[in-house]
Image 1 (cartoon, rainbow, N blue to C red):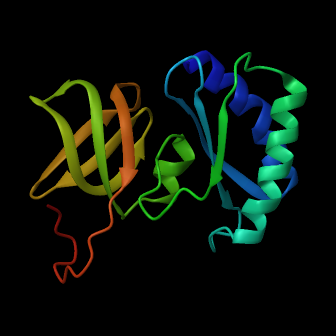
Image 2 (image 1 turned 120 degrees about the horizontal axis):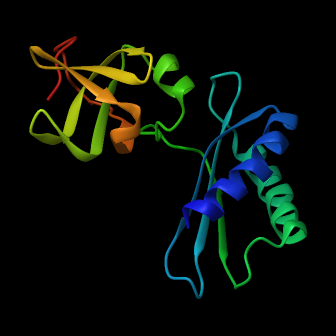
Length: 162
């Protein structure tokens, strides 16, 4: 599925850019007989994506997938915003969201842990520095299995993470 996600990403990223949108992620989930193709888009302005832009994108994404014929089975297409706990996939995501909270799940233990929730300090070469309570962890980009922004509603503890 990762090869298919990569091919879909390569197909859709320039098209998203042509529509002044950012392709946040392409995910293919579910069983091979009828997978779900999720396309997460955001505006390049940083103001969030409108419903009208998503409706328009649904049309051109569907047309592009049909024309490219990369998926040989029936599938369900979902085009949406990344949401407030958007995935962090690209180097530029880590740079853009420095200072915000994130949850990271790794594919191998880092200092005895595989899950971290803390504040993104910075990106240094191929490592994310994440402040968790009073400790800063160095998490290699290639060790990250999944990462999302983390929104803490109602917290008055600036700089504190849980």
